[in-house]
Amino acid sequence: MTRTPALRVSNVSLSYGARRALDDVSFALERGRFCALLGPNGAGKSTLFSLLTRLLVTREGRIEVAGFDLARDPRAALARIGVVFQQPTLDLDTTVMRNMRYFAALHGMAGREATARIDAALERLNMRERAGEKVRALNGGHRRRMEIARALIHAPEVLLLDEPTVGLDTAARRSITAHVHDLAAEGLSVLWATHLVDEIEPSDEVVVLHRGRVLRQATAAEIAGEGDLIDAFIEMTGGNDEAAA
Amino acid sequence: MNAWLIALHAIVLREAMRFLQNRGRFLSALVRPLVWLVIFAAGFRAALGLSITPPYQTYITYEVYIVPGLCAMIQLFNGMQSSLSLVYDQEMGSMRLLLTSPRPRWWLLFCKLMAGVAVSLLQVYAFLGIAALMGIKMPAMGYVYVLPALVLSGLMLGALGLLISSTIRQLENFAGVMNFVIFPMFFLSTALYPLWKMAEASRLLRDICAVNPFTHAVELIRFALYAQFNGWALLWVGTGAVAFFLLALLGYDPARGLMRRKG
Image (cartoon, rainbow over all chains, first blue to last red; front, top):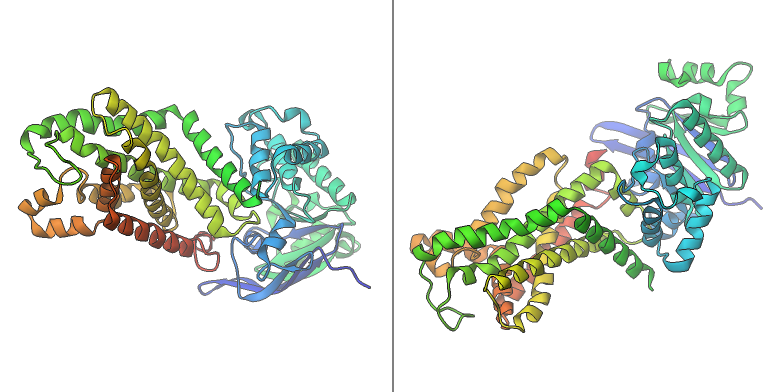
């Protein structure tokens, strides 16, 4: 018997007027895998994330989260998703803990249960000692780690991250990437949108998205073949200077 | 506590804390109506004679007349301020956090609305307190009766703000809201002058004032402050609140609304 994928996207399309932003996109994210959604800027990654989080909806295609249809049962599907948006979504002038409590409350958690879950999530990202600090006092890397910890409070089955290392320095990028790979190793299913191939490990699953279409889904090692992933990516997408980071 | 109520509590608390921490906003929310009460009313009291009309049973000074209108003005500005903060939230991304939580979207937006109402109540009662210290006092029960009236008028004006926020793409466009929503709504109402006084100047303007939902919010508050019930105003304000909220929900519908236009 096969297990239900953590995330299944089937024949999803979306147009902005005459422009086709996503065209028949299909892929599946197996449970406990780190999957990179790799595509150059403008490939449609953020649009796809908006659909996966139901900020947008489309009539073309189907999205399932842990077996729950996002269109038919949005609350059950959204309850199983943790999201880190490309743009930070933090109250800078309140503490880490207060930010976390607000998010926990949006998911229906309060009191001791919320405190225990917040502590566990912060611990997982080595951020527990920062709980009392104001977010404004944190550096970019710590703010991102806080957002990742926040996305884990409600124990989601799928973690979606939309270019989470944008604007971070090299050390912070490496740290965040390693942390999220560790989460996947612990069994969490991760979809990581990026245009930077150095954030991807050879064993990671990769979905290459270009101009709204999926060009390929395989492991990074399979896509790279005998050469480098970056060369294979540039060849597929017709050249992209930013990919090398 | 129920998960829905936990979300409501958190959203209202967050908005109230943000308001109380922002002293400048609190101060300006109080200074604006006080300037009208102290300066504008002083200048107008000699020029504007007021006859006895319900809910008043004696002659009143102009300062007394405009207090309910200024309460509604506080809520009007607060509704627009909430709208501004929603546009800011959309630009800053925190609206995404709210809308991706596993509660129905209508409930999340209603929570936002209630948060704005809670903030407006803090402002209105602070203003009424200062007015009382200046000698403009209402009947004691009026301060209790006005609470549900303020909640309803706050919901209507907040829903209008929510509706506007669903149509505005950038903060820069907000100045237009001031010119085309706040000022006409406020000046074409009974906040500053009664309908019969307006009719002396222009019947058309009187008619416009009569169908302005803000007029009815002012009258609902005015009657409640004197522990009286105005069913017609209640009907108008209730209908306005529901209509604005439903239209705002359309604006925030993921299939056709704001997020799509923002891409």
